[in-house]
Image (cartoon, rainbow, N blue to C red; front, side, top):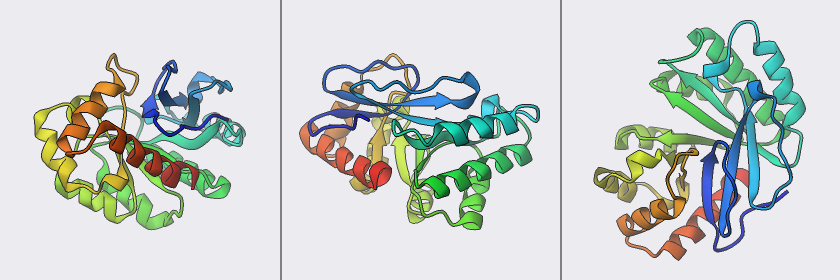
Amino acid sequence: MYLPQPGDYIDIHVHGGSPASGIFILESLMAHEEKLPVDVSGVAYTYGIHPWFLNEENHKQLISCVENAVIQAEIIAIGEAGFDRLRGPSPELQRRVFEEQIIISEKILKPVVIHCVRAWDELLAVHKKLRPKMPWLIHGFRGNVELADQLLTKGMFLSFWFEFVLRPESRNLLRHLPADRIFLETDGADVDIRSIYNKVSTDLDMSVDELKSIILKNFNKCLIG
């Protein structure tokens, strides 16, 4: 299993990415694709059931895929898993399958990368019900200060949606949040993670090397333990 090294840029959420010199990627594998990790330098993996591709006919099979896959060392987290009010099956099925993945996470002691679209009440209700000990990392965050604070009080980490974090208006949110709870991502889009680091380091009045060091510490705390 490969883990990020000091000085690496960490792209915490990628679909179909390729590693490059000095860039570590955490690739998201989805259970419905039946794709398994490959031991490649510069890459580790998450594995889970994305709500977009979940239905009543496949959910048991997909849970079985997760149970079998996530014991592999190259898979360091469950996910992306979660809720989506705009796309996917019934809220009840989304909740049930999300809870099943949280139970797996707690059993094997691996954190969870979360997809959540307009379903924060549902997410927080599951957190309150199951009281997880493993960290939760919200990917693609683009919410406001109040929502961010609510998630942080539950011990969660936030990875920012790449388009949002590149906008000037994200600066106030970035400066409000504790740097030891943030991550950056491309989500596999045609954007350079280095440009995201450059913008965020400027917003936070620090060097890119300082930001790299902080995010590496966050990675070790959230994903390695």
